[in-house]
Each structure stands twice: as structure tokens, then as C-alpha cells.
Amino acid sequence: MLRMTSLRKNDSGIYRCGIGVTNRGLFISVNLTVLDDPTVPKSPELVLGEPRGSVTIQCHTENVKGSERSFWCRLGKSGCSLIADTDGYVSKSYDGRIVITHQEGSGTFNVLINGLKPEDSGLYKCGTGTPSDSRDTETIDLQLTEDSTIPKQLRRLSGVVGGSVSATCRYDPQKEYEMKYWCKWEKAQCSPVVDTHGFVDDAFKGRTRIVSDNQKKGTYTIVMSRLREKDEGWYWCGAKGGNPEQTSSVMLYIENESQTSAPASPKTATRAKGTAPVSVAATTSAKGAATGPAAASTGAKGAATGSAATIAAATRAHGAATPVLHSIPNHINTPDHTYPARTGTGKPLGTATTADRFVTSSQEAQSESSSSGSPFLSAVLPALLVLLLLAGIAVLIKVKLQKKRNTSQAGRNPETAPILIDLKDLQKNMTEDNVQTTKRKLSLQKSVL
Image (cartoon, rainbow, N blue to C red; front, side, top):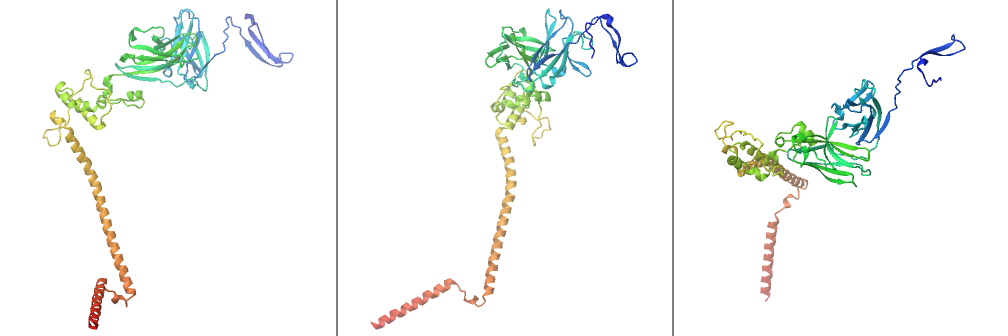
């Protein structure tokens, strides 16, 4: 092995490496070029993380003013695939879990990633400009441990307009942090909402607060009330100061009250994780459902007639469910549904009056009991008839067998057949003989005397 050190510009040229004392032997040629401004690649910086945890990566660049675009990309066979940049681009797989922040006046920017997954391990680059033509980059080797000490956290919250939600944020209780915060994520940036130093964003004043901070358990709780539709989105929990920043993310879904009375859509079913949205009709109490028709006919000028009928029907079908919404808000429009008339009214479909659209509870109970009783009788009567028929057949068979047995016994002893007499006649004869004998004895005694 040949090594050349302290290279100079005039060292450039063609060199030969061979065997023998002259150039006629075995050799190879090597072309050496010495550059004026050599760029020696740096070894990748190793960053360790845990599954479900977070990491903070510092990228040192010459972009002191922060005017150029900063990026984070992943190295692969086809180059460096862009994951996020400060222009607002975020790869779908990192939606809600990556943030790029600049440190003013230093040229350094931080890349914060949370919700780490085993597949996040690999080589990355951070720098300014674009991944394809930037020379101001650093290579990062991100590796995740197999085991994790970080518990699973809730990553989805669901609320309704005007309601409230709470989220529990976790941090390492063995580390001391100067501040805990709650921010809203959007396009690789996170805008502060509230923190433990007293800051509250104007759009969230009076609606969002940190209600508790348990340093022994490493948890603090965020409460958001009087929710609005525009509150929907990704939010970050964070703890920083004194130790590397620790973060986690959660998605907040906001539904309108009117959506709760509509049929379940695939989106709402996915958000609820198996819990179907509850409609106004299904959650109305039994008492409210029974009085719905009267209230609709007197107070709503016919606009809530169909809604009241829907409430009554839902209450009969599901029973007296626990009420969630005790009344229909005034701002929800309840269309007037038209129901077909009952059989025998003489009115065509769709022209039934309000009186024809409802049935009293006693009439419905009577119709339900009669409809439920007829199937029972139709099922039991055939079974009873079959049982009676089987019992009669069994009795006939038993009688025939007994007669056959008596006949066979008489056939085997023909001489004794005439001797069989009635026991009553025999007893009667014996009684008459005893009377005659007694009379004879009495007559003999009289003659002797």
C-alpha cells in the first residue's frame, strides 16, 4: 500500500505502480488530481431514539439569517427523498409528527420528530437549499432501540362544536424541564397555544389551559372548551429547557352538532374507532319521545312534525335509552317528513294528515301483543296434536298386546278353560251354603232340647 500525505497542487499527474526495475514489467496507471478546495465528507452523526418516543436533531449550516429553505430528507438508492422543508412540504408518513425550527443568528436549525417507528431507522440529510444541489448538508444516522420504556399514548381526540376535550401529556419524570407547552401543528411548524409560563394565544384565551402538572408521574393535562370547527387539527405536547426537548402529537377531530343526527359516514366511523355516532333521535329520553308529537304540533308550527315522529319511532325501537342530548337545538333544521297513511283510511300515500301519522301507545301495544301471540299459538298447537296422536296409538298397541297374551295362555291350557268362573258368583254361592248349614245346626239343637 502506498500513501501520499500533505498533497500539493503540483502533485497532480499520472503515476504507475508495478513490479520490476523498469517500465516493461507488470504495472498499473493511476491518475491523481489535487483540488484547490477539497471537500472531505464527514462521518454520519449517530442519533438514538426509542419507539413511540421523540428526538431533536441539530443541523449546523451557514444560513445564519435563515432566509434559505431548510430541508430534511432520507438517503436511499435513488438519492435523498424529501420528507419536510420550511416551505411547508411534509411527506404523508410524517404528517403531524415533524417540525423544523430555526435558531436565530446561529445558522442552526432543529428537526423534531415524534411518534418514532422502527421503520424510521436509517440515514438522513439536513441542509439548506434542495437535497439535489445543496453542498451545505449534514448526514444523520438515526437508529431506534428494539425495546421502549415509553408507554402508548392516545393519538386521537374527538369533540363537538361547543363541547370540551382533555389530553394528558407525558414527559420523563427523571428529567427537569423549564417549561411545558401545547401547540398547534401545521406544515412542519407548531404555533404555541398555551404554556406553563402563562402564555395563551389570543384565539384560545378563556378556552384552553393547563390544569395540572404532576412532576412525580411526569404528566400534565390540557383542557380545551367551547370548541370551534377551526380548532380541528394536529396538536403537540412538549417539554423543553434544561434537557433535550421531548414531544408527542395528537389529532383532534371536531364534529358539528348537526352531524350527530346524520347517518354515520366512513369518516366519522373511523374517528370514533368503532363507536358509531349517536343521533339526536336515538339519544332522546323515553319521556321526551312520548311527548314529542304534542310539542311538535303546538310549538314548532309543523316544522318539527317529522322529527318528532322519528324520535317516537327510535324510542319504541331501542327502548328508554340513556339521554345524551336532552333537546333538539333550535339552530338545527328538522325537515317535515311525509309518512304514508295507514291501511283503511281511504287516503293515498303521502297525503296523511297529522292525526293519521301517530298512534297511541295502547293501540301500538295491543297490535304488538296480538302480532307476537299468533306466531306462538301457530307453533304450539301442531305439537300438542302430535303428542295426543302418539299417546292414542300407544294405548291401542298396549290393549292389543294384552288381548294377544290372554289368548295365547288360554290356547296352551284348553282343559282348564271351563273352570274359570267369576269370583263374585263363587262368593255368592259360598255365602248361601253357609246360611243353609247354619239353619240345620239350629234345627238340631231345638230338637234336642
